[in-house]
Image (cartoon, rainbow, N blue to C red; front, top):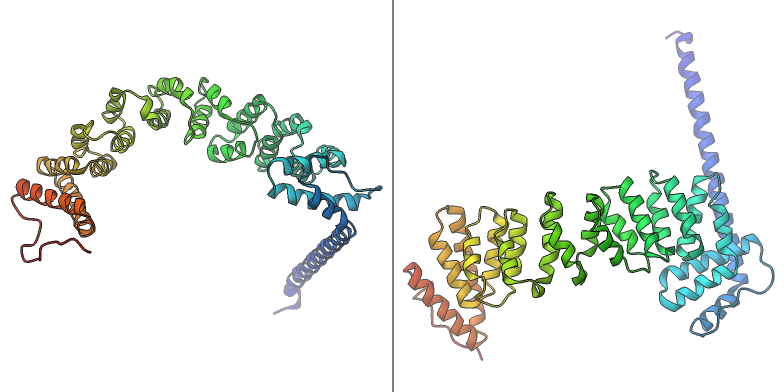
Length: 397
């Protein structure tokens, strides 16, 4: 191969070699710098070990914690702040509040507030994180303003969490939610996790959001209210049950079903016959927890539903209702015209019988229940469930 044709390859190889060497130098420099900072931090913490002992001893004292004596260098301030932030992250209540107040006294909040205006994005985000940990109440407005400028950035959630931790008014939480939902409408659960880091009760904000026309805001509010005991939400949920948006309809209905003790039986019955199968399934599931006999007929009908989940929850609910529920499942198995419906009911019957048989050897009441089920099974299906060659069940000692 002629030397001239190798010349470009040699040049490329030389450039690559040079770039690789430069990268190694950069990595080595960064590593050395990191080790140096770690050593300096460790040295500063060692120098102020007595001060941290003082903090530990006086954490339960009603008096305010005092800042370190003397004038501190920037390196010492950063090292002490690092330790304080570690403590704040794991403490709660009055202990955390006292350390946050100490950070304010030491001027750490002001230092990080100044960094919010840095031209370096990573430095702004580092300051944001510190302010959030320190619950810097005076910086909430600035954090929200920064969020509005950088909402589309991937670090918007970091800013949002810091703002949530610092928020002191429900209006600040609402402003935060509005901004995040507008620009990140698919991140409902992450947004709610961020709101959960606030010391404020978000329920009033959620109730206010239920009155808006913004579907994404309503969705966040409904998910946020899930699992909470908020009876005052019932009038809002009643309206949303009739929403044209199926997702809102279903979520609102499922929330209402958390308050069955406050709902009229007719309301639950209407949900069990709803056109949306998700609502039917949720209502049928809840019906098994109501007084026995109230919904047996509608549950029996639900076993013939076209949706598998409705049938599944109907069987589960009936199985909780004793012999009446067992008989209803047998009735449904006999009435089923489609094979999948019949097979599902028969499988449930055999599972209930096996369970009752296993418990029968442990308790006289369970034995009587098993015998009653066996008699009913034989009467309805014209065959014996119990193998006649097996010995009669006895009560174990």
